[in-house]
Length: 366
Image (cartoon, rainbow, N blue to C red):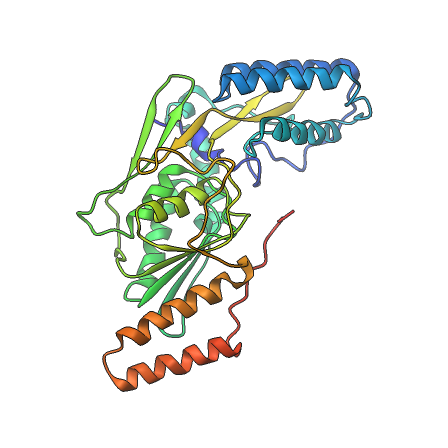
């Protein structure tokens, strides 16, 4: 069974997470500290990173940089962490890799790693999900009976499930649905499977994704699930951007490989290796990918290459393009002249720019 805290940390390099603690006090670092941290990082990569050969090469190159004096000017912990994280991602060519200075970080308990979180951990998790509204930034009906879901993160399924059910109630009966993943930075693969399940008929079970874990050589399978609330089996468009990452990419890729939606936007970030935070020495923490996604349809994943949309457009224009496409489908399927004329009038407003759908404002896009 996939480890609970590993699943929660998939997006930890990019989001406010277990290892990103901006309030942590900074401190001075000595040459001895820098050497110890890089040595500790090399050990964690060797024992955890999903590709052992890459781990060995990256560790060797980081040690060479240390000996060459690359980090001599990094005299504070946060500056050193940022520099080390940048080099780690570049050398490993993996955006899930990362380093933070977080002296208050507490590694997950053994029970949590086995899916048996303590009550305190569950309370913290629930509060985090409540604060983030389950990762849902907005749900609305656009003119023309088009549903819209803005999903920024896949928070733990145990606590996000009710919010998904509520969101699907709001878009049930829509003539089409747009799922906006342009700012989705990832999260729990169980939650990705839960969300996808709402877009297939009850008896239409789909094998969505697998994750291979290096540590024990096991592979977890992710299938569509029973859900609470209405399913939606009508037309779906999914919006993507370079900001779409990790679990957000899996969601888009699953929609695409299952031929369940049309993807609109730009190629995604290209991160398919999930992992979690591991403690280093002297208060430093690394995010180390310990698994890799394997799509059951393509037998590969989106690492390095990203997910390529069906309709390539600027992310800022993606909502408008998807909206116009769904309105065009309504024009074609209109049952009466009056219904057709109404949709055509709305489409004309959208085409003329009278209705502005360009509401994409990426957060921390750099």
